[in-house]
Image (cartoon, rainbow, N blue to C red):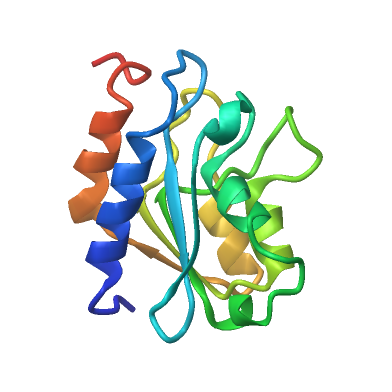
Length: 151
């Protein structure tokens, strides 16, 4: 189910993805966490803070206290499907989202098999998380990643 502000928050996530330092080996992703009342809790982007391995969702979640009670009713907006495989960290973004207690994830597009197999959306759904895709904003999210997509 889409909410009236989903497009606005996803556009903010796309603008955050544009802040990601360039990489030939990773996607540029932006993420925003919004509580049930519609207030922004946190934001992040790929490779934020000079860490070449940090993912957008991981960055946004890492700025909040563990057990933050507002996460249970919050939505995370991510320009790309959260990762379900990861070599650079002990936990995937999908695992971090589930562990944080988020119940809703909104994405612009599903991860293409460029660097890793996707499947994050499926894993989230199987854990009871609602996943909403906004395909009309997928082109904007892909444009930020044109260099790694061969375009």
